[in-house]
Image 1 (tube, rainbow, N blue to C red):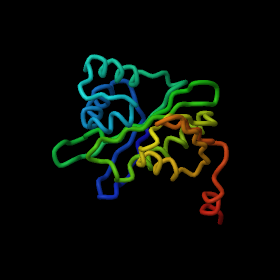
Image 2: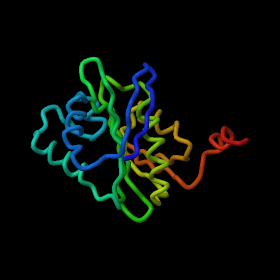
Image 3: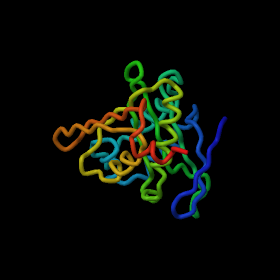
Image 4: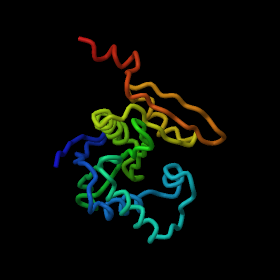
Length: 185
């Protein structure tokens, strides 16, 4: 299985690979290392005391996704208090031909390290290679961290506010003009 490496802003080396069957325990561990605010921002609902049977069931569903319609990456790090700790996951699920919903989670103690930005950029490459032309998602308007990550992508994004959240579309078929300037030789 192909594996990638990135380094965080604080120097941790992350090992990243595709999600696979058997990853449910890692997904649950990641969820357990997200506080109430992170869970609320990620899942758009309060999950202070979730039913762990439901959490496990959802983790199993994600880990056993159909590779034709679902792909994702999971990152691990050797932390001082936990070796081979799952620290982030990013994934997409096809919702119609060429269109996929994207989701990103980073555990609380690893946020602000550039992990989400790097992993989402990696996932956009994978998604494009798999025929995804557009990524869609819903995010809270006040979630500045995710908006910063999304703005750093080299693809144009359309944001449509609806109340406290915004629906967004990322066009993977073209690059932002600024991104093209940085890759010209």
